[in-house]
Figure 1 (tube, rainbow, N blue to C red):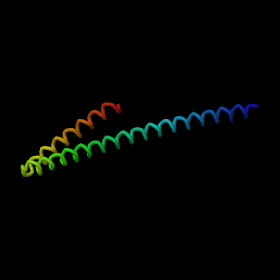
Figure 2 (tube, rainbow, N blue to C red):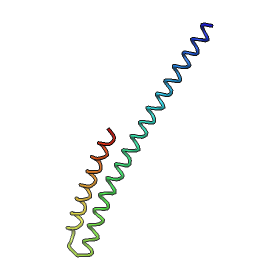
Figure 3 (cartoon, one colour):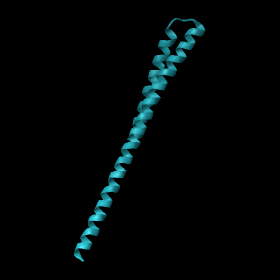
Figure 4 (tube, rainbow, N blue to C red):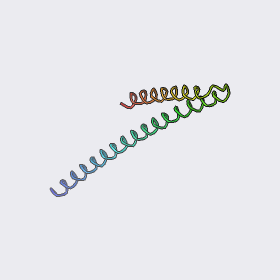
Length: 90
């Protein structure tokens, strides 16, 4: 009788440990997903800013000033996205 009770307790502890591992793995995967989306939005903001600047350069004919201004605006938007996302993750 005692062995059966001991085995049941061991199984229950094992099940709790497995649940804890699954929860920690799920939390890690959520964090990776959030970080991946932040990185993607950072790159997209820069590409859109630089692309918009290139279009303005070709439309107005201002040399490369539109590209540089668009690039830095996209960089600033990307940084703002990263800061907002880092505040929401915590």
